[in-house]
Length: 128
Image (tube, rainbow, N blue to C red; front, side):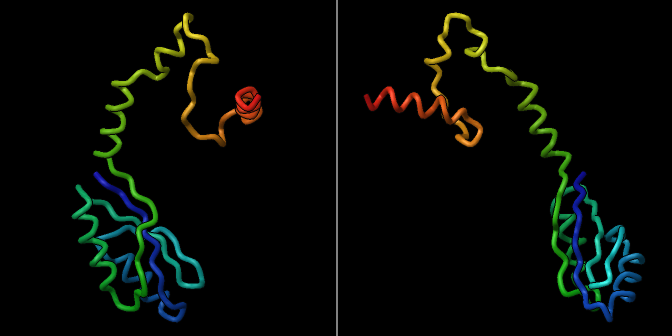
């Protein structure tokens, strides 16, 4: 099962008609709109292809300027990610090995999350 949120854009002068058409449309569920012509809806489908078919139906309604997917949830994709997580160690075994000196562990991740002061000290030692 896939669920996606869609932002539909129309001109304010057509807003009432577009909202009514979306409420009556079986391809989506209406949620809310604002006064400048943005409408929030969701679509559901058994797969991406079915969602795209529903999106094309929505795009073909009168006075729709655009209908863009903003967020998507895929149950199949979630299941694949859950299997990867369930089949992996949460903490790498080397981090639990008392025989490994933490200073010997090479970090190759995101420097924004790294202790930059420790990183700078390491380079100071190498430069001397």
